[in-house]
Amino acid sequence: MVLAKRLELFWHDQGYAAARFWAELVEERFAKVGSYEIYRVASNLVNGLPPRYADDIAPKR
Image (cartoon, rainbow, N blue to C red; front, side, top):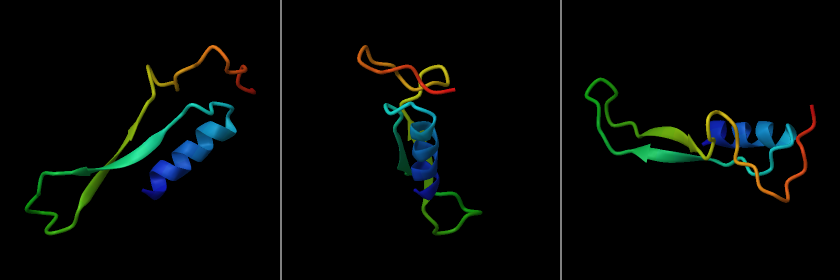
């Protein structure tokens, strides 16, 4: 969850305000991991970049 927040902050600082990241619980249980809950970070990136909208200004470089 912290990683998702840090990734979103990074992309927002790069000028991509549309970037979104969130943590999703992995439903599977793995014997070697035990009873810990495992999460994965999901995003709305398209081909490695956040979606662009018509009213977005160009990102700073």
